[in-house]
Image 1 (cartoon, helix red, strand yellow):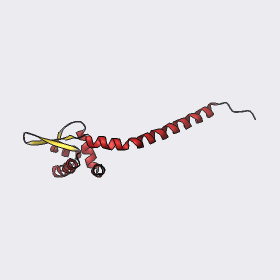
Image 2 (cartoon, rainbow, N blue to C red; image 1 turned 180 degrees about the horizontal axis):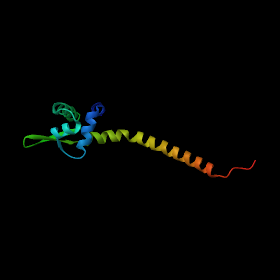
Image 3 (cartoon, rainbow, N blue to C red; image 1 turned 60 degrees about the vertical axis):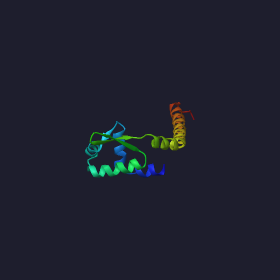
Image 4 (cartoon, one colour; image 1 turned 120 degrees about the vertical axis):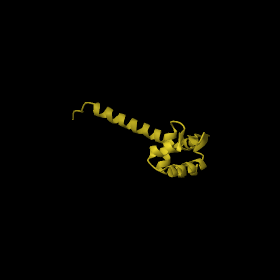
Length: 111
């Protein structure tokens, strides 16, 4: 999983991942979408393939790349305890804000 973090730290790789979320794409289309050269995209794809994030298949004379979700599921499972922590804190904040709303809705006490 550490390798997945390293690979996803690079912004263009995350953009490639976003593009592949919509389905298979050839290198040329990814290069056009990212506004970078085809060799650059190919290098990113090789790194992503080595980390297990993408796979490719041949279609006539071009290679189509697609997303592999397994490493992302592992990443999501690792994040789950942190997500529960964030949700717990947001719930605490929501309760606190609700008490503040209740206090501001009360009429002022006569002194």
